[in-house]
Image (cartoon, rainbow, N blue to C red):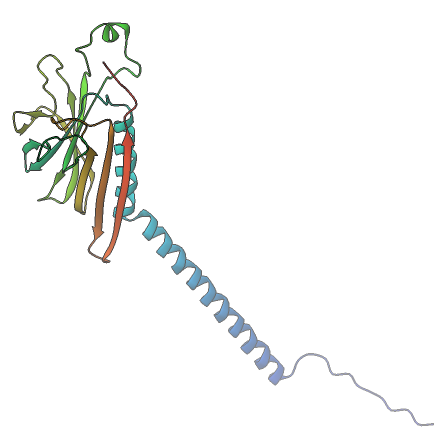
Length: 225
C-alpha cells in the first residue's frame, strides 16, 4: 500500500486577498452612502422644521390664542390699518348684526390679574387694565404686537384717535408675512362682536418658495360687565 504525503497550504493567495479587499471596500462604500443619505435627510427635516416660517407660524398661533382667551369679550376692537393709521371696522350697512367684519388689526383688552379682583367686580366701568394690539406691518411684511396699559376711564388703549399708541412696548411676532386678516361677526350696528376672533395669515419663505397658511380662532373667556 502506498501513502502520499499531503501538504496543506496555509494562508491566502493573492487573488483571495484582492477579492476580500474589494468586498471590504464595497461594504464601506455602501455604508458611507447610507450614512450620507441619512444625514442629508436629517438635515433636511431639521431645516424644514426649524426654518423661520415654521417657527413664526407656531409663535403666531400661540400668541394669538393665549392673548385672545384671557381678554374681555365685551371690550375688544377690530381695525384696518395703513402704517400707524388705524380705523375701526364697522358694518357697511344697517342693520349690522350678522355681518362678517374683516380687518388687519385686533386689539385685545384684559386684566393683568388672572382673576378679576373684588375691586374690579364692584366697578362695572373697569372692563380691562391692559391691552395687546396685533397688527399687520405691510411695509416690513411682519406681524407686530404692541403691549400697554389700558385706561378704562378715558377708553384709551392701543389706538388713540386714529393713531397707534406710541407709548406701547412693541415686538415682532412673525416675519415673512404675505397676508393677514382678522375677522369676527358683528352683533350690533357698532361692529361689536361676541368674543370670537378669527385669524387668517400666510407666511412665505421666498428663498425656497414655500408657504404656510394658518387659519385659527380665539374665543374670549372673560365677560365683564
